[in-house]
Length: 504
Image (cartoon, rainbow, N blue to C red):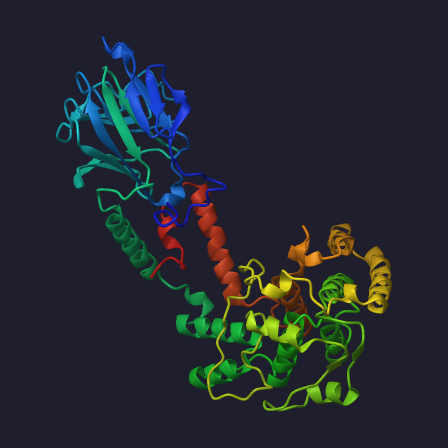
């Protein structure tokens, strides 16, 4: 179902997956995981008709929703209906007979649209036939299929929040439902491809607002600002040469930021703080909340052994950092830092090597992950799930220093917002376990936790230089995602085919 409906967030809008045990009339029986429906009434008159609804309404973010039912047995008379209905429709009726109810009936092949009077629509159906029902959530139309063949549009302008439904009326009638748990007989994916193509063409044909400048120029500036933001200096230089765009930040400053990001993503938070204070004095002094978050992350890295209190930056390195060329690199010493920990972070893809001024290369740097605060966590490594010999908890003297460091954090916590203090309490909980990596709070030691604080620090540095704290390209993508959610909330089915990540 996730393949069929990738835009659906089932935490907010669950998909129909079975028939409801509550929304049915008494003469309906359910079995086989509530996918089989059988009639157990007398079936003497239309008053004995019984229907059942699915467990959930159809989410608009499906774009196109489809389900199939197999007629296991037509029973005595084959008075069966397949269709859609609203939540308040009476279940003591066949689909289509009441307001906001729509059905295709097997005994006469008629379609019923909120009325007891049917219209000629398709062929009759009986035992062994597979009947499909599709709802186009873009234009509100409904179609049916029989044994994999499209029968045409049956209804138009249907309201949102409809449920799949079936109705039976005479003894012996049995149907099985397929809500996507098995392959469909009809090629619904082909229908979806066509709707996706139409939506893509509609987007492509939208006129560009001239007040923002020429389209190509605006897009080039967005790409350039993204490369600058993340410190991809080599790619930014190459892109500038190809497009004629000016780089909005000096290359030395970009490399300085990249070096700081690399330190954070390697877990060397103490070095990152020291380097930031030397190269960008005032940023952390004026942003206590950011300094606090960095210190808390340093505490976590000290527990893991990736960081230590004994940071001794060489003065000449700090002064040279702002003057080095592309082939140069600032050097910082960290006593008792395990080289394995650094390599582990790098091997997990959490270092920023793109545009790295320390390693000259003729190849262009590439963004290995779309940096965002809600990006997917890095894969869990073996070192984050095993007790490390280099852990500060294994060294009594360093453990004492860690406790002292924690007391200093408690004092700093008096200057930050209350909600920020929670992360310090969570970090302190690591000390309650002799082996934090095999504890309920082990997730804090995962290297992916460095990414958010790295992003925040990088944005703060940029804002101090009057540059955007978040690149316009990321803002545009986030804006598009939010608009798609708003479209889904407003029952605009086109949102299913407008996601830029899903359009090929």
